[in-house]
Length: 126
Image (cartoon, rainbow, N blue to C red; front, side):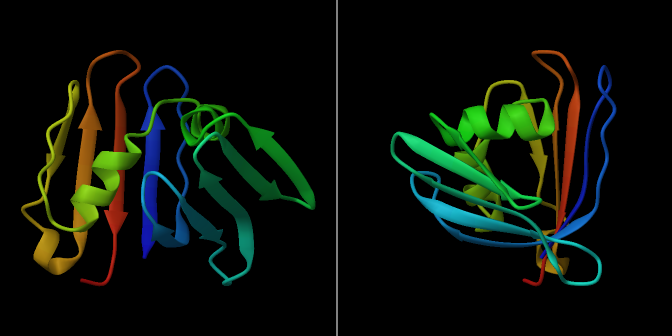
C-alpha cells in the first residue's frame, strides 16, 4: 500500500511512502517505507501509549492521535481510516471520503473543517 500525499493549506506537507498497516485504531503498527523499500518510520500504538521509531530514535507519546499530530502536523482520523480501507464509508465531522475508486485501490479523504484543510490519498492493492 502507498500513501500518496498528506497536505494542509497552512503547513503544506506532502510525501509519498509505501506503508504496511496492521491492527486496529485501538492497537496496531504502521511501517512507512521509502521508495527503495527501506523503513523510514515505524509507529506502534496500544491503549494509553504510542511510539515512533525513525532515524535511530524512539519517541513516546500518550496516544496515537498525539503521535500523528506531531508527525504530520494535523489530525488524522485513524478509526475512519481503518473503516475506509475496508471499503466502509464511515462519516466523520469535517471529513469526506471518496470511495468511488475503492475497487481500483484508491481512496481520497478531505477535511475542510476545522482548518487547516487536509487531503489524504491512499493507493492500495484491493
